[in-house]
Length: 350
Ligand code: DAH
Image (cartoon, rainbow, N blue to C red; front, side, top):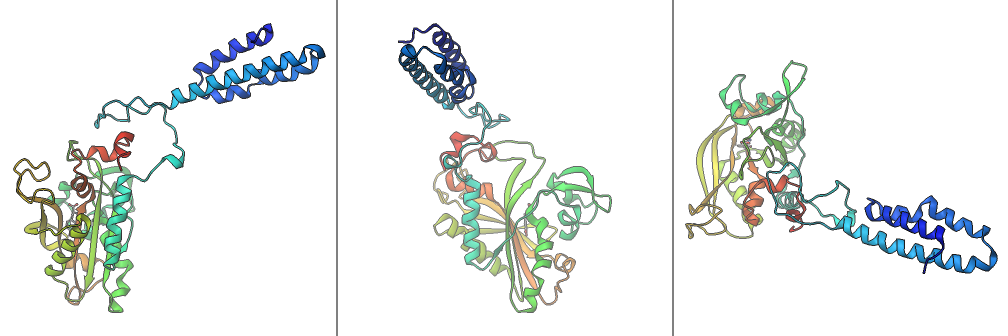
């Protein structure tokens, strides 16, 4: 039992501090405790043994209170997720988790699977960027200046401008990379090899947010150019990819659409992997049996020309597919905002 008045006083003081500290373990190394140990030298040798014992007891008590406090700090009192909250309400103090406790984000995991499927088909994987210029967002993709289709993309503009005085932007689609890919791999064509690349990356749009719309999301762009590429090649590539990704045979539906950078352009739907149209309550396709997934088409000759490729010799296809949508369908996630929410109780399920 601690009855030495000095140690008793020290005990009260340190216990109080430990119970409210954000880093309780540091109190076990406090100067006051060190001083109490150093004081042993000045104590009457006959009383040293008893003093030492009491000091040890004090350290033990402090140590178990510090452990309890640490556990209290780490305890997460999970509240229902509010996907619209600006931050994770379940996170008490922003802190870095030890890497042993972390895991890769579901989007990262799925991008890896998507990339592996395309790599097996001979595609190389490229990255996009988070700030780009209007040439790559629009002009190189055959959107003339002031073309109304530019407005469809709800592009975030920055205040900084490029050398032409045009505002820099947060890319609103991964198609911004088409021109760069065509230029980077143009030598493949001379060697008789195709240009075949995908870009799975992040894009940004000034959207009204709801369960299906997020300002930050992911797309995978695909570009394939060679001699004599046709719509059949496009459809079979996408069908193959989607069947691999969902691990089952799927029917596809192709409807005409408009994009400035492809001609002809299509909207591509796949038979619902969950109900195939057999369930009018299906959450994924609302019982329609089809899910619109991506835009695609044969690359417009002007896009090939802007990268220095002769459209009379070569043709190609391109596609752009929402990755979040793919993942939501795969795991039946009902709200897109979970994916960017950084909410641990959602992320821990992957
Ligand atoms: N960039 C388009 C979008 O975000 C999607 C797209 C459509 C990409 C057709 C393509 C394409 O490469 O050929 O809406």
